[in-house]
Amino acid sequence: MDVLSSTRMPIFLKPEISNCTSQCKCSLGRSSHVTGSTRCHGELALTHKVLDEIPLPDTFAWNSLIHTHLSNRDPGGALSIYHHMMMRGARPDCRTLPRVLTASRICGDLFLGKQLHGQAIKLGFFDEHYVITALIEIYGRLDGIEAGKWLFDKSPRRNSVAWTMILKLYLLENKPELAINVFYQMVELNARIDSVVLITAAGACGLLKSVEHGRRVHHVARKFQLESDILVSNSLLKMHIDCERMEDARGFFNQMTTKDVISWTEIVCGYVKKGEFNEALKLFRKMNMDGIKPDSLSISSVLPACARTVAHKNGKEIHGYSLRNGIDNDLVVQNATMDMYAKSGLVDYALKVFERMKKRDVISWTVMILGFSLHGKGEIGVEFFCRMEKDQRVEADQFTYAAVLHCCTTACKVEEGKFYFNCIKKPNITHYALMVSLLARAGLFDEARSFIEEHHIERHAGVLRALLDGCWMHHRRNIGKQVFEQLFDLEPRDAENYALLSKSYSDNEKWDLADKLRETIMGTGSKPKKAYSWIEFQNKVHVFGTGDISHPRSEGIYTELQCLMKKVKAEAQRPGSGFSLHDADEEREMTSRACVLFLLADKKVPHKKARELHHTALERHWLFQPFS
Image 1 (cartoon, rainbow, N blue to C red):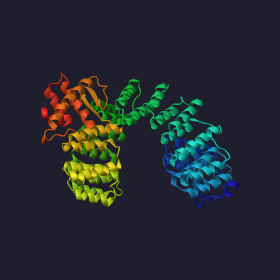
Image 2: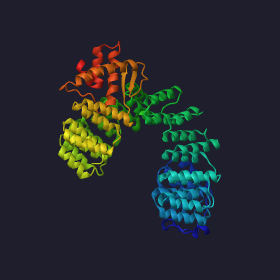
Image 3: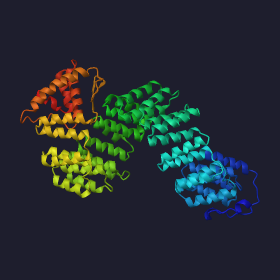
Image 4: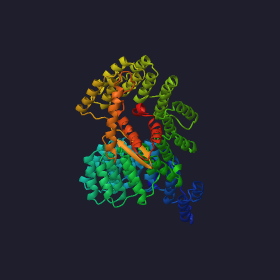
């Protein structure tokens, strides 16, 4: 009691200590009941009642109740319990203060944290590991990392928990390079390296995307024989993926003695991010074959691969799996499923998933709005946005506004687009480019150029391409020429710009200039974006990509395509033919033509059926219009 009465405490925590001398024989038994109630039932009201009946509850009972309030995300309640604890003359121990400090941090009360710091010193708990760590965290989060680091440097004892806290604080302030330096300092000082330290250091390497740091951290994990720890190995795997070293990641993944669902999800995610969607799907199948049950994160990670490969069957199978296993109720999975269907051309399926959802967030609405715009159903997308605005639980974000502006562009709704643009608090360059595209496609070139000048966005390539798109639609060649000059001034080596100019030459029947430009593109070393086209036929996905001859029938298909291109070129060069030999997205067009030729060349497919398929999937590709 003497220690407590001499301790400086916050005003609302200062107890009115009474000379309570009565004792209760059942005090210890009731304290145990308090602990049982909080741990087994979580019935806080009953626990408080039991605690109030105990004349002198022990510190263990108070600590248990404080911990329960924290577990129930009630830091204010935890502080209130601590207040009552002090009022009734109980003495806090080295487990009480870390919990109260945690509650103070969650409440954002640095002043209280400083007072508890003083109390810890006077009670003799400052050199306790958990007290030091809790103090470092509250100072680091509420007063800046430098304050936390100062306290860490002054602390008499530093354990791995305190070191790890400093690492985490640097990561929270987005300073991974300083976190790595602290890790190297630990190694030099022979501090204890445990799995949590390594996991945190691996996360810092991933943020830096540093292969060199990543290999050094991996070496330390191997040196301390922690590489086999599943949590460490998963972190190292993610680190290699974040450093964009898929070969190293795959090699390490193959060497892992133990793999769990997180391991498989990370490697699948890595291939999806890299754009190797077929490999991602192969690994997902192998994951199932090896008896690893996919969870919601696994499902939501692999669904984008189904969308990008137009693997409708795989996507439907995964959707079916999520339905059978109750994972479909997960909001992230539902959003990913909608996105997969929308990007696979099955927007009606996406709509069915959307309508069955019990709960929707802003991502759910954005996916559907964007899905309608991508399929030329801009008016429906705008209607969906209006429907979303009536839902008071959802507020549009920058991505939602970008989606509805895209809808307005495809539906040529100029006034609606202007209205939605003005609703955006802080427009970004995507919103500006979409507005320019909307105005240019509507033929409002003067207004589009005034808009560009007003917002000072004339030095952005995306904005200029949006304006150029409208110039082509309305055959405004003079404006288009000026925009081209600005675009080449901004990005002189961008292959996409050369492809756009090539299309311009061919549109104006300047075939020689178009051919020379193609040679120039090859000479500059500029490479166009790789393009892929897929077609699902007889339960199998056939892939044709730029420069990719992996398909068993690639040689014959591309040979026949070259012959057809010669005929088309002769047709296109006839004055007034109306055909353009080049396309703004020429690489994609070539792979699309290969898909059509694959269908036409297949003996099992009647030409009538092939034409129906390519009319539906490829929207009557222009290459075959002269021959249909």
